[in-house]
Amino acid sequence: MHPTLAGDLSRLPELLQSARDFAAHATVTLADRPVAVSGPAPARAPLPEDGAGADAALGLFAERWAPGFSGSAGPRYLGFVTGGATPAAVAGDWLTSAFDQNLSGAGGSWAAELERETVAWLRELFGLGAAHSGAFVTGATASTTVGLAIGREWLGERLGVDVSRAGAAALGPVDVLSGSPHSSVPKAMSVLGIGRDRLRRVPLLPGNREAVDVAALESALAERDGRPAIVVANAGTVNTVDFDDLRAIAALKEAYDFWLHVDAAFGGFAALSPEYAALVDGLDAADSVCVDLHKWLNVPYDAAVQFTRRRDLQVKVFHNASPYLGLPAGEPDFLHLTPENSRRLRALPAWFSLVAYGRAGHREIVERNVALARRLGAGIDALPGLRLLAPVRLNVVCFTLAGDATQERVDALARSVTASGEAYLTPTVYDGVPGLRAAFSNWRTTEADTERVLQALAAASGTPRQG
Image 1 (tube, rainbow, N blue to C red):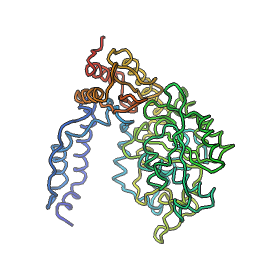
Image 2 (image 1 turned 60 degrees about the horizontal axis):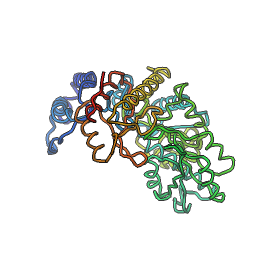
Image 3 (image 1 turned 120 degrees about the vertical axis):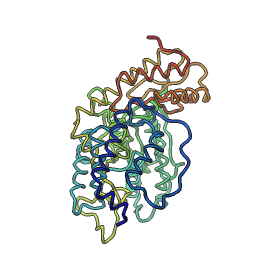
Image 4 (image 1 turned 30 degrees about the vertical axis):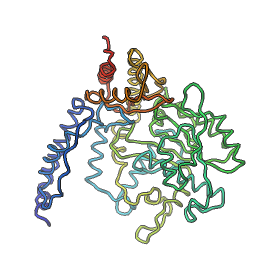
């Protein structure tokens, strides 16, 4: 064994303690560090010829790279839709690496059964029935890709084509209909050989809504003369967290032949709260469902789950035939269900967080985040220099500058907020107007954090907040 490696092995408990101490300090001070860091990164260093050991590596990371890491796990990082990592989830994530289980197959480990238990808990959490099976993937994009891949195979079943063998070209043109599709949908269509240009956008409800007009969707389906299609519905759009009427869309399946995929990447968590659960009424009727867990479940990147009613078609698409891996039979190994053969135990952080905080703890996070988003929205509405672009429906506040909201002015506002170190927001364009989004999904965020964000926005927009 290389002497440096042997030395690290002999001191492994001390090394892990050093990493623990460093991580604990970073976590405890998270709320006080700048939320985002600007400025140039260090110049690239050459590859070391002789290793310096784990202690030296930790020291070099702390000196050279850690100062430039964002506070994205913290309470005022409101960009994208980013959760943090609950204490239990961090513990589970560390143990994931320590145990380093190979989830290619179930042989020799109970890890796969832990994933199945976790998927079953999540299925119950989101109000899905026993007909839905699931698996962990890296994120919402992978989850949507898996869902649409199964939908593509379903189209082949309807048209008498074995897509997994003959290829997507054998299907002919495939149409994917959606009102406000996330950008991951055309990306998945490109990967799957369906083609980005086959996305058919359906008119939305009037009044600056992002929800699909179900009557317009029915008309689009009727024009297909019975040819099956894929419909992507939204349970929470990115800009304004608008929800399609899932129950009404599912009812169209009585007259029209389509695969229903629901993008519930973060909006699916509305199911946890009695006050908001009606927004996802009908989710159980979907043929495939995408939910991102490093968003509102607050587990570390990367983790998402996909669900489907057609595991048989999922296996047909993703099975990996090899003598050393075996063929799928009975309860298939996860390597037969997703694009990955090599899989880390992503389920463990989610298992830890669900055991530690239960349904009630995660419901509290959702309801608190929604309340804080509404508080920020009311504060923005009261600032003369800013205006809301849409109502605060759930956990995202979409807003812009008052007056002439040019892209340059909005970009300058975002830069000013980021430079303050108080908050981080991501840009958007809504109804043709450049704006910013503040997405609440972090378990740490409090009213005090929301007040700090408001103060930063007031200062950046040149309209100091009173009181």
